Image (cartoon, rainbow, N blue to C red; front, side):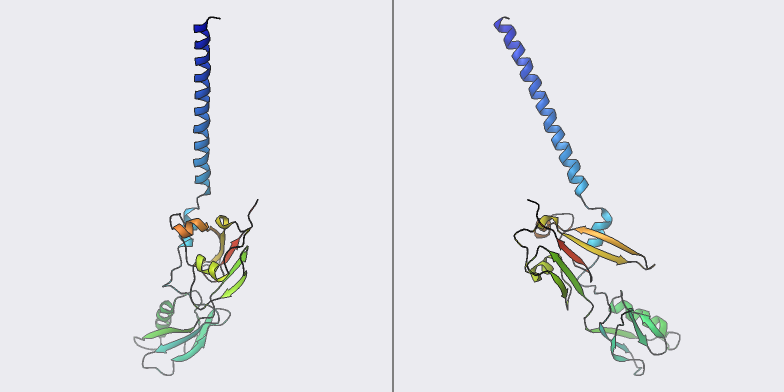
Length: 224
């Protein structure tokens, strides 16, 4: 084989190898994009993660309330405890569902029920003591357990209360497990991804979010 032919043969081989390498790079990039897309949380999970706010505290069992009805001392109650079934007792109207409502929502609901007995009732509800708000932090944290809180907390705040991660924690595989009971009484379970790097940077689809009572923060062990 002449030298010129050998050179042409080598050029064709090099060109073929370069094309094959290019195909491999493109394939890897496509697979990476698909993998990233597959790992993104669904829209309903993102909505649920952001459904609680610091300004919206939902009442629950054992919370102590003050229910005041304007110009009606017989209906006003200085201290009423939300029962385990989520109800409170109000004179004239009986049991009222309090659990799952804000204080303002409960006041409006009571006022609506009192219209049968009183003209234009004005009702206010104040939370005197919070006893229903708690979260769990389990897995590879310094102090796992149940945390009874007097105010709402975010995922990062709950982690701080639990003493932070252990050496073996898979911090970017952290999850928050939540059960939501709808108005129809049907419960729905959510598993919300809570990557530590995203919570800290605030750049992910799910940022540091407010926990709901009963939420379970799970920190798995790193796979070496």
